[in-house]
Image (cartoon, rainbow, N blue to C red; front, side):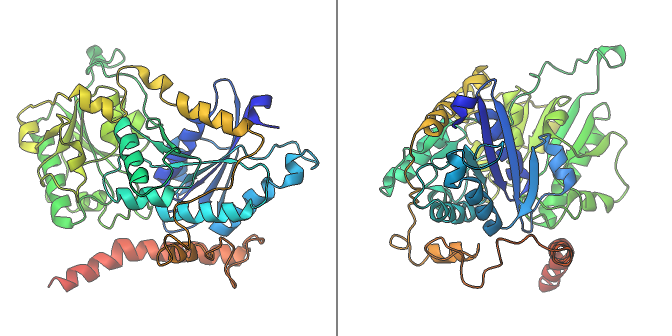
Length: 461
């Protein structure tokens, strides 16, 4: 029975990192019709960036179920969930099959799951609606990432600008662009900025708060990271009446969507003279941090869009140049570009309204309707009697030298079937195997954060 008939929506979200889990889980909630009963099953793709319990809790979304899986285990779970006799109500279960499968993965992972799902659902009259998209600003590998996502029923674009670019890429290679659907970032919201007034604080005010939102992989070297940290500390010393926060993405040993070899907290421990009294490290939900932020500073983090949505003064730093490798080139024309020298002197930016509107920030109050088009499309697809097979652009005919390697990383053959000798998808990992997996992941993270930087420094001698 479709969701439209039961006023319920059952969604499976497959994610491969903390950031993508956040995007996927929150997007699932945004896509659920108002007043519907959402059943959310979370699947975490096993790998180097599988989120920890703390990272999952920080997102603030509690799924109805959550488990760690390989790609093959996920495909088997979804295949079993959507088998034909269950659709026809013959199976003795209280749960309806999935209405939506949301793939919140890196591009290669999405492509592999699309081919695997196509094979798993071969010959089925009815199947779940498949949705995918990007977790934030798209400023690199546009064509590569988009074509790897082609084949989903909906490819979500977080802004008008992205929707236009996505359609242009698909149409430019002769692929169907009908899947592109404009939405907005699912984690926007929160209290609009009203200044440093806080009735609960002593004398009705709280300290003016500057937050530097870091990124795991930008910049990617010790010199630039140390420079940014020193400038933040200097700003705290120049403005002792301000509270200065270093907003961190993860704790040492945790991984995010991108690898972080040089955590800022470790660099901070080695600063001569220590940290000023008005400087502190901050973890936790970005939305909660923004509740008391008066100036958000970053290199190119999606946090800038969260901040702009609330109309918080926001700066994208130019100290290290405006470069594609940093991602801050995306903010050209935003009115938010500035340097630490300007901030030390008291500068506050004024964002360009037209630029902000094209980025899906919707600070004009229209955010409540940003997902309406996607909800309508999903409702129609869920209610349809039949859905066609998934049709990715990449096939053994269009990309014979590229696609097989992508699928093989997930133990799939060119036809989407498991490769011979692939790990069994019908078995739960035993206790010993689970311990080995955790040990291997810990060794990998140790190698990335401790061993690799040492080897790199030795190579520079």
